[in-house]
Image (tube, rainbow, N blue to C red):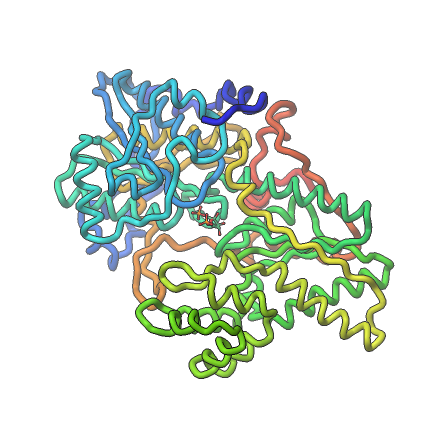
Length: 556
Ligand code: FBP
């Protein structure tokens, strides 16, 4: 464990509030308004043991004599602030169930389950991680348990450790994996029950039962602080255009929330790009139009937010990426042959033989540095690493070209000094906001209580999050109910569908009403750093987009 700053040390002592139903002895009962009619018949065959289960809610109950539980926990995927508090909530709830309960942490993600690498999480160890950011207590990883050998290895591990339960803290893929693992253990007669917890800063694990995934709130608050500061700097210096790329692999929830928090001059939303089928030229045209209209008013500065996943939503780039992924798959010889060609021009000539005319045209319009990223920066499956493409630099280069062109024609008289920025990893491991500390602590409790009740294949859920913690509701929801069949990489797969920004819903509609004003008005807003002490509407507030969804944003 590294040294702690005074604030980190202070936060160790923070006591997250719990909804009253999780404080007192409780029992689980089927949710009165939730029947089984929503069950998807196609999926039922894949989940014969865990399909027909009800949504569960909590009721006050009698304290029963209980036995100790031995539970494993794993962190899966990218970091999200609050992960340590899920573990703390789980640990504290297990100890309340029985003081001899124990918690085993699997190291470095699901691979720790496959390889049986684990540590016991004790009170002393956990005491150094309460309310802290990061996933460094046990680490995380992106391995998926999918092959028959991996399933067998997982079974061996949980059996050898004699686990009553396994808690999987992860995003859509990891929770799908949790449902499959629950079914596999049940079919194999293994006693270990599996419960999932919804995590991802991207905010795209969201449905009727999950109002927001944990980590989204803190990450957006960290990014919004940075953006607010940049806006102030832009307004003071009046000389730079900042192009800020924001994390969010598929959905633009982060970009939308940050735009609502800070009011930059232009925010691109991937879902709108996809919906309107905007070409790269049209997107560049929008930015150029904004810069020209501001220049007409004597403003040669501004801020533009760009979601990380947007590049894949631009129709012609999407087609190009799909063709490249197909062509450069490891089973084919092209990737190796391409790497052997030293000259970039020879690589382009090679590709010309295999890519469609429109994709070659698209590739040639991109700056050389982006072309190289598309061709060489690939994951082990041969796929383009979309999140690594520097979209902010791509836009800067294309906007610059267009402005030079307009200048030559005498249609633009401004100066364009661009600054690229990326808000990414710094948002994933910061000190969690009070909202995430409390939400995660409650999620950990719900996970423990679901395991105590002996159910499997469930997701820990907490709702009514725009209200004070005392009014939060706890639920156990069969993960199965969130699953669907979807085509991914040319194959039918069982997945939890990613929740993209809904262009009809209140957060986007509100943004759409306001954004025209933000182009010229400099209505910049500085949320400042996350506050842990002070007025509760500043310290404990939830994401603005969530408040808007529930139509109760007071801020505007
Ligand atoms: P999860 O969906 O696993 O929570 O991760 C999300 C994310 O932070 C994305 O926003 C980003 O594109 C990606 O992880 C980066 O992944 P990596 O850590 O592998 O660079």
